[in-house]
Length: 70
Length: 424
Image (tube, each protein chain N blue to C red):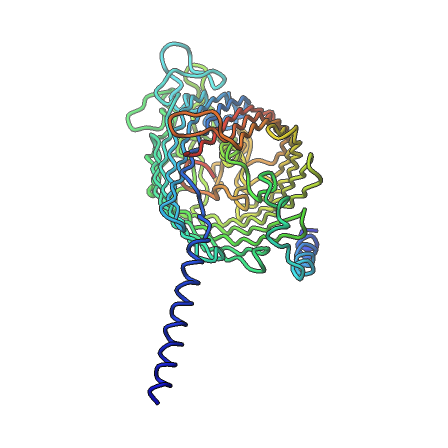
C-alpha cells in the first residue's frame, strides 16, 4: 500500500516536473496555508505528540533526543 | 598594431564594466531573504488525565498540566543570512511523577492520588540558535544550529545542520538534514528503591540494580523532497532515520512482576523493579504531505506518516485540515488526526511481566492503541500591521484548540496561541 502510494507520488512528480510553474503563477502555491510544514502555533502540539506517542519524525519536528521523551 | 591593442583594451574594459554592471544589477535587485526582524510569541496550555501511569507500573493517575511559553526571533543579518534565536520555558505539574515518592505524610500513598512531593512539578528550559545562509540565486540554503535544554533530571546539548537545493525554477526541492543530541539523565529512582529506604516489611526484596550508563545519544539523518505539482497542488516526502544509544529507560517508572509477591506500604504497591528497555533503538519514519488550493475560500492540507522501529512498534498517522478563509483577515482551521501504533515487544500491562524477562515496561505510551484528535483554530492576519508594540507591528494571531482521546482511556486537551510581530 505504502509502496504503491510512494510510487504514484514519484510518478506524478516526474510527469508534472516537465512543466514548471512560473514564479508569477505561484500566487496560490505561496498562500501561507499551502506551506508544506506545520504552523508555528502547532509546535507545542507536535511536542506533546512526541511525549505521548512512540512514533516521531518525518513531520519537521523532533525525532528523539533533547527531552525525556521518545 | 597599436590600434588593435587599444581595441583589445577597450573591449576588455567594456567587458569588465558590463560584468560589474550586471553584478550591481543583481545585487540591486536581489530580494532579501527576510525583510525585517520577525518575532513569534508562542504559548500553550496542556492538560491530560488517564489511569495507566507508567510511574506506578501501569496503574494510577496520569493527571498532568503543562504551560509553555516560547519566543522565536529571526534577525536578517544581511540580504542572504538569518540568525534565529529560539528560547522556551515549560512548567508542568504531574500527579504520576509526584508518585516517585508517594509517601508525603499528608495522605496515605496511593497510585490514584497525587503526592505533594518535590517531583510533582518541574521546569524545562530550552535555547536554540540557528544560522541560515542562502545563495545569491536562492537555489541553495545552508543552515547550522546548536541547542541546549535542561530540566531537573535531564540535560541535553544538540547540534545540527542542513543543506537544501532547489531546481526546476524552484518547483523541486531536495534537502538533507543531520542532528545529534547528547543527553544525560540524573537518575531518580522510586523512593522505595533508593539506598537506605525502609518501606514494607522485612520480606520486601526488589530485583533492582541502578543503571550504569546515564547518557542517551540520538543521531538522526533526514531526507526531504518537495514538488510543486500544479498551480494549486504541491506535495512533499520526508524520510527520517534515527539511531539512539544509551539509557532509553526512564529510571523512575516502576514494574510489577506477576511471579513475585506483592508488597504495599500504606496503600501503595512497592516496585519490583524499574522498567528495563534495550540500550539501542533504530527508528524509521516516512511521511508525506499533499496540499491543494481548492479555491479562494478552501485549502485542503493532508499528511500521512508510516513509522517503524526495532522495538517492534509500527505506526500510522493521518491528518486532514481544511482552512476556510472568511474574508481577507480571518481563517478558521477545522482538523482531524488519526494515530495508531502496535505495542513495543517489551510492553506488558500491570503485573503481567515475569522477573525472568530480559526487558519490561508498563508504560502505556509504548502499548498498542489508537487515538483520535479533533481540532479547531482561528487565524487573524493584518498585512498592514496596524497594531504596534514599540517598533513591532502585529502581523498575525493564531489560536487553536485540540481534543485528543486514546482508546486506552487517556484524554487530553491543548490550547495554543501564537502572535507574530514584524519590525517596521
